[in-house]
Length: 106
Image (cartoon, rainbow, N blue to C red):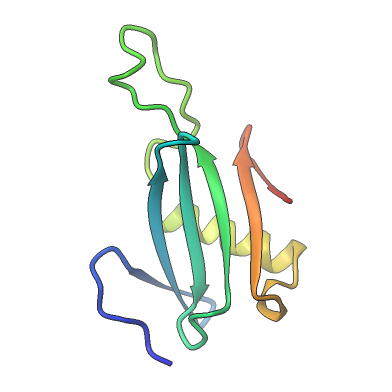
């Protein structure tokens, strides 16, 4: 099954494996929800959340965001964590959380 050609789906190659990733904002929970999966098997993916506070809503106080941007480098860190700590490629969905500078598995 091929990935749909949609805006917002980004691709990444890490250790000769092709991945895709998307980022969405959950306004109710004030979290960024990041989905990372295998390009060859789009139904095999993991999800992690990152707490996110809108800096404009917290003005004049400084926001407490740990991550200012979800970058390919950050996605690689999540892939490394997932590959080392969980057999996510055998499960349909795995959920992690990024908080205090570390990933944790739920």
